[in-house]
Length: 206
Image: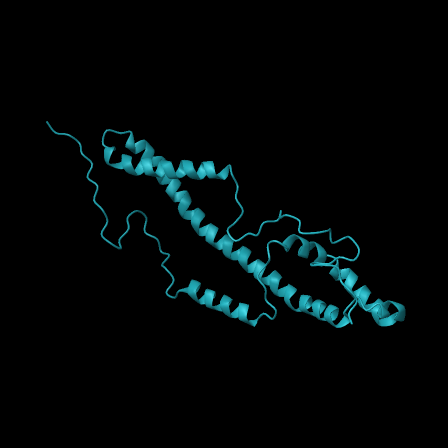
């Protein structure tokens, strides 16, 4: 009496089965080179600071006044002696802050575009192979139900566990890694209140 048995032969080390791809791994480690460039970028940027998550919301809110209000304030302090005598605003610091914005905001936009494109490039490659993996998973489930599909069942069970876990995780969206929280405890009065700034009330400069 003969029985049908499925023989599963593992691939040798470094050899894969299935479809052969014409896409080869990059000859150079671009990721390492990019990380080195990013390290250099951090060194080049003057006054580069890591965000303080406890002050992030207030800093963003207060900075929102700067684009329109600071130029007007510079003009007022420069041209109106009674306002200048109050000595509450540093014209030199205001001018430097606007110049810093004008120099680096285009860089932020360019880097943001690069991040978006790189993320898409990663997802596009992952989506291509994930589509093939899901197609194979569908076929493997049907094959595992056949009389000669016993050898595939452990693999199908593992694939099913991964697929179900991924589907369940989609119902609980999470922010991308490295994303700073947007809802933070308030650390003081609203920036809209007169006489307040990112840290504390300003006092006349001596």
